Image (cartoon, rainbow, N blue to C red; front, side):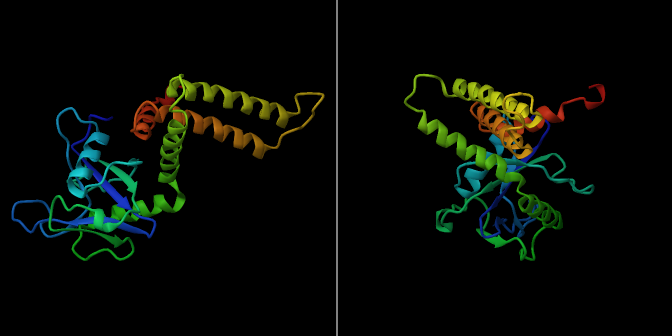
Length: 239
């Protein structure tokens, strides 16, 4: 759950297939001195994983958390350092000169298929997992929802009705359209017969899901973690 963590670690990538790494100080007594690592750090009292990640990201790189998404990595059995870490991912395609090296000796992007030599083997494995996530498009869904949320909120800024209320009502509207598509697939209306394809129904169901995701995003910038934690708490054996 959100309180069961010690640190938050952030993978920042760009559209060129590169990952942002910081060169740690070569100082005795710190973890991995003189090695390239991802931004991140320990939690402060009362912080959620998202809040820790957003704070560490800005402190160490100067970047604001925009579409910062939880990253579901499989921890290595012998990885004591990150055993209770929560991982996040963000895509950033800005000018590298805008980066601020707030900690360590250097901060720069590296190709994910040509990482520096001085990098922990555990991080090499986690970057490999990240590349797999990116190949199948896992993080892109919530990033798109974040952009859609921002666009819709800006478009409805002048309306009297609360944005969250509009989005919850939108879920109901989209669910009604999905129900109509189902009737069309089944040919349940004798007058219309089979009027929809399975692809039509799938598209309508996607609209229902997207509307619900935008509504959830309207309640918190960490909507992806809220959904992940909620689903993880289901007792499937008793259902």
